[in-house]
Image 1 (cartoon, rainbow over the protein chains, first blue to last red):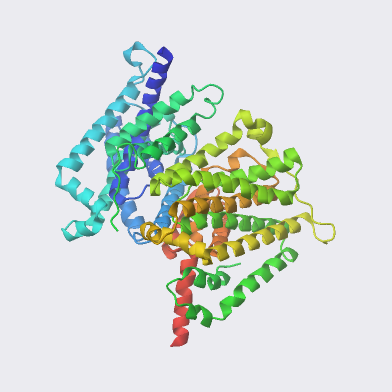
Image 2 (image 1 turned 45 degrees about the horizontal axis):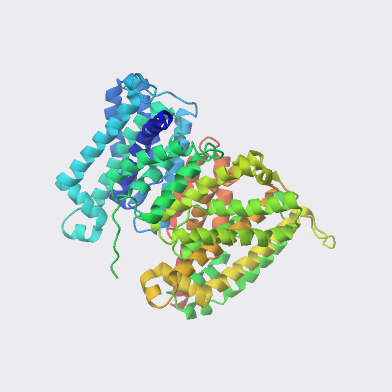
Length: 291
Length: 342
């Protein structure tokens, strides 16, 4: 029992990383109606910017704030420069563009900052919480920040005019345009926000997985899985899904004989089975099509 | 092997909106297919064995992309899992040849059969999933495959992390050609037959049912098409194509290892599909050219920035030809025929 509890806690700590990423994935999905394959690489690039700012002597929180602003602007630019011209192209062509963006960001980060692993500071420290080895202050801080971010987003989307306009633009662009919402700018704003959330996620994840151009590959995979498990239409679902993926992954490692080698496979298989019963994710709304 | 020869077959196959008469009036395209085949037959006598090997790979990728295209392009089911089918095909061939001394000819139908069954079975749960949820489920398959192949319980058959070596097929004694040339001709033959079969499949009643499901699933089922059956069958046939490509790939490289069949292979195939043209059969070969050559070109420009250059080339291609090579060719053909009429 003790062991299981410990694994669940460790899973939650990993899950916080995935939840962060899943949240960013869902945010951009809400804004542009596509899954952004380059999301992880955008977060990685932002984290490198933060690292560079800290190297240049900025205090942590200044670098943190500046990185968020830079990422926000960069996200808007990516949308305006790269994706707006091809918004009428077939969906698969847009996905190819995401793959291109992924490749460009990954390769240029490697070229600018090279592939050696760098450590990234954390404002929360690494002392164990509750005196045990279960979870340390950084992981607790990461979970806290993820939850705060979720709360803020919820308030923004439910409580403000701009949030309402963004939701309208994503769910029904034509009607939204008719009531005077500038759909193009809402999409751009969505990109900016997703890039900013990704930056926060990257800066929280980097102290755990260490900073290097490929740090986000695995994280994005789990974040993607968490987002789909929770339901792509629900930010809260994404967070829950991310935590769930972390826990399932760690518990799967316990199955004798093949558990340790195939824990990733087991986690993914569990998710697919869940999707069999809830095809739009656990918290997702099912879209009803009109004939 | 540029994209020009392909437009001819692209126009009637994909341009449903274009009147058939237009395609008939352009008599040249009907000569294009034989011309391409003749060129393909001559190549081994002109090219170096390295170029020939590359072209063999192009055909194999083209065949794998065709498999993906049948599912995604014609049936509208999204898949990121085709690296797994490719891997299953390759491993079926390798295990049969390495462990059971089966002749290489028999590995292709075996690989196709195994992949058809796996694809069909995977198509059953896929029926419940749409778009991105289906993407995740297939993505799972691609992620899991290298782990399954490395699993110590299967090591006896799969060779674990080390993978399995194969013998390159020997040319028949009565032909005056070497092993590389034989591999090329063998691949060419298989690919031609399978492209021909796919073209016929798409033009048939079954093909129309497959496309109707893509265009409007509800209307399709209202017209009496058994949507579930056709979708799972398409999944199986698609896996079969990609599996045969995998077996050919194993023969060509003469080696299989788990890390050759990662999600990045799936992504490459997807890129090839988009570049060649979604829903275009000849476009698949163009996609194969892109998948093989563009990373090499990027690498030769700059080793450090190869990924970035690849990305930029891909972006440029998507900007210039948003509907892929076949869509681009269709526009060119339409322009040309319009100016001829004036």
